[in-house]
Image (cartoon, rainbow, N blue to C red; front, side, top):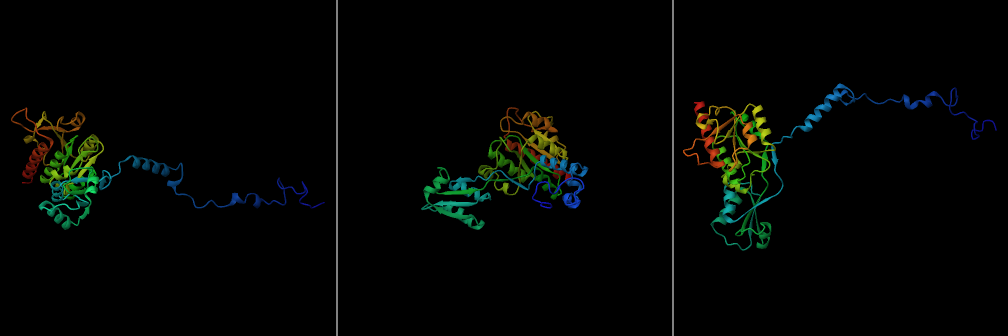
Length: 322
């Protein structure tokens, strides 16, 4: 029947000159708007887009910097009455003091309680078996303290600290010093002789453990300790920032009393207890400096060597200021 649209071929649905399929119906989607034009930096192929991509790649490669960098979330336990009291006296960031039930109160215990109360540190009484468990069987004498992981500074924060004080930077770097007591002694000397911080390697070196804190005698609470992922790269970064880098070595080219760089931006690198400076670190230093000794057979450990060098630097800076 004519006009029956259900009959096959009755209406031509496509093709040129079709009266029932107007041009607007066929190309409606093609005429729809595509929205606002993207910004140049978002359009692929545009110079601004390529520039932004390069900047993002560069930023991704650059090490992130933060005011404080935590080494980890693990807690450390200090066990024993003398150790806990010394830690509290040294102003370690103690998170809590734990005492075993039924522990006899003596002078050390009372002092620990008083310092904890004065500093607002929580004091908890626990069963002796629980204290044995959390201290992993250490000889705790009924008293233990919980210490959070130390938060390290970024190496460049030490330069900022010097700038804020309007002083030429004085920084101590330790090359593979593994004894935490030596680290604590260096921190104590650095704080006493006006250094702006201490840098330690991230691996194969002593960190700011309870032993280092105690040896620093509270100086670690006042002086930042930074961690460097790569000591040689950090030496070069300090050199680019305008610092002279001197390494302490028995066969140094210059004797410490003759060092004339002390009143400028200075980084003093101290080697490990047994081996001294590693070969690459020694090569990257601007100058190797020796500490004069009466006998060539004698040697100084890292903590003492750093103290002697920092004292000499402090005296030269004092003389330069007149």
